[in-house]
Amino acid sequence: MENNIGKDDINKLCDFLQGTDRFTQGPQVQAFEAAWSKWLGHRHSVFVNSGSSANLVTLLALSEKMNLPRQGEVITSPLNWSSDIASIFLAGFKPRFIDIDFKTLAMSPSLLETAKTPNTLAVLLTHILGFSGMTETMEVLLQTLELPLIEDVCESHGATYKNQKLGTLGLASNFSFYYAHHMTTIEGGMISTSDDDFYDLCRRIRSHGLLREAATTSAQEAFKSERPDLNQDFIFTHLGLNVRSTELNAVLGLNQLTSLDERIDRRNKNATQLYSQLNSDTFYTDFRFEGMSNYAFVIMLNPNQSQKWKDQAMTRLKAFLHSENIEFRQGTSGGGNMLRQPFIQKRLGPIDLADFPNVEHVHNYAVYVGNYPSLCEDKIQGFIEGLNGILS
Ligand SMILES: Cc1ncc(COP(=O)(O)O)c(C=O)c1O
Image 1: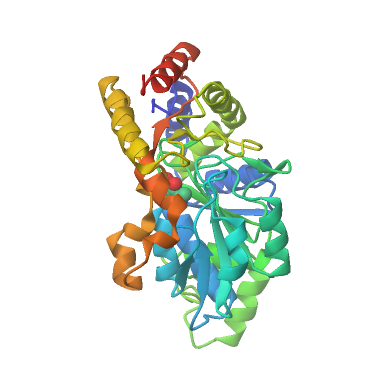
Image 2: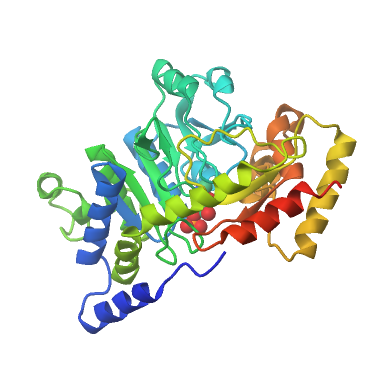
């Protein structure tokens, strides 16, 4: 990755600091939320201090919306970020995992139907590294199974499904603006929804569960008149935390948003150059590129080759990346198979990894390498040639 904060971001921030006496949760946050909602195509957005906080507030809001169900499962995939799964647990739910599809790296639609149980409350679909995880099969199944959809778009800002932006396909969606993402507020995250009640819940949960954060004053007044015994400025209607961000981060977000589409185009151009030339005997190249907003280059060995071939090729791949000083992450998003992580095993007990062959392949035989707007064509070309030559 290269620095994602430009000189104009810093100038905007300095100008803002010179001219304001309000530093948190004010007009800049509101303006950023409105601009984000417009760019995305949802009615409401709630700015928080990280993508993880967006995950947590969303799952807590889901629990409140469903009246705190005692038992509840959320279907998700094991190629994920830790905060998605942590938020499922923290909201009092249980994750139910289904394996991934190589084409999208997201949960496999064909496994969705059998994963549904009477306790299933929702599907948490994480779109991986800029690929759209939504497919025709999944769209139909979500409708017929009547399952609410939460989208984690933290790695896929601007990606689309049937020309509609990811993050607008379900009840609510989450974004991260951490440093290396498509745009940044240094730290930051967003929850977006068009559901008025869900928006109201997220606003309250973001700020201690306070009634005074409710989306409408009429809701506030109605509740206050019901509870005259409470001190009216301190009514905590929901279980909440303080995960707000600041005016400073919102200033950055507003400025970065103006060039987001251009950054996405450049990242996609880089990815197209790479994937159109990668050797498809050595590497998997059959991803679903339609609607992509590439975050990073996924370099995955061909899953159809033998285990012995894959072990040797992986050793060569890593040796090449090390020798060229190219930073990479094995296992791609979140380090690969989350089912191997101690915090999950502690809660769910032993899990048979043989039930998850695709994510296991990613865990062992895939890496990602950073893609960023200023990456030049020549550098990518050298990278492609090096990759294609690892077995020669
Ligand atoms: C899919 C996904 N969800 C959630 C997060 C958490 O975002 P943050 O780092 O802003 O907390 C990340 C982080 O990169 C992510 O990739």
